[in-house]
Image (cartoon, rainbow, N blue to C red; front, side, top):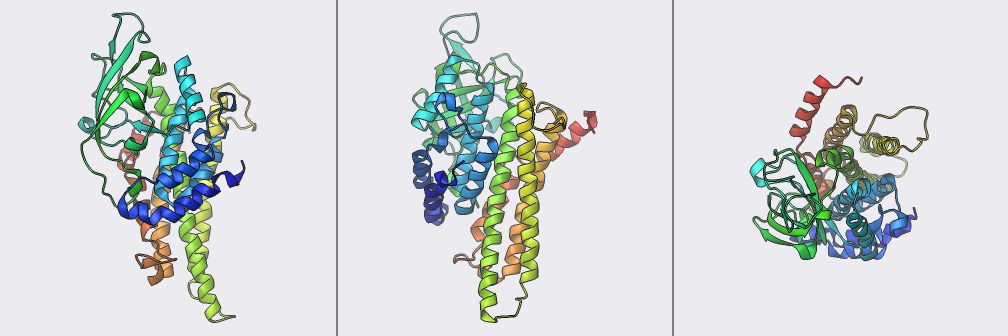
Length: 396
């Protein structure tokens, strides 16, 4: 990967980050630069017109963007989660065409997986897919309709397409879900609340009533349970972990710059804050290793899933195993706590310059954004899932 591809996007993200945060507005300037660099098609295979980047390469871009503007990084990360679902689970020609369109036209893809009626549970739906057109037969005949009262759809108004979860049919169980790709001209949005939060303010993650009609071939063949377990949840945790690394890295960078400034005041004397900065550097390295070791393991597990040889004699956990799901949930639980603790401690190490609301060493925005890590797919829900899975998993 050529790092310069993301340079202009990072510069635009940094330039407008404070304004995006203050006004809680979508970071259009940095998204324009990401489009110009063709990075919205980063994970689309080359044969479909994309850049063919690996997940690790995408994570590195997310990390860089997070250092400049976490809202930009979150939008980019969530878009790549949806692209990964399309790449790993598209089985119809129409979804193949959609991937080509994402790469060619640099479409931005959002996700609607939560519902107000089920308190944001991703793996439960009240809304259902209903088929129109021909009666009976395969779901692929005719078109489908759905109405979803989503508690959150991040950057919905800026998106060009949305992947939506719904029950397979009117008589299906709440957990018998499918994933549906809906492009902009096929849906309408009615806002139900406003987005005014502590952090990630530029993602514009408001609630909406989404009404859609789409070709039935835009319904994924794979059950959403498989898509969630194999792709959506692990990729979410991995790109988010790289975002937490970016926030932590920027906090450590500002602490190191302040340390050098303090050192220049008394040449030859080590400032008192040096020991604390050294500890922050070590913890950043640990967080980065946690995130990218997991990304490497996921890539190996996906290779095994697709029947490709891995680069190691060690057999990775299967991507659809309980053990792997526990590992990915554990990454999110550990990383989301570590980033808040690291930035909080950086404020203590740096003192008032970091505690200021603005200025070159201010860590306020970074800390507010970091607190969002625990509530996006709530940590309590993940911890409860891991506890239940540990009781039945036979993997050591």
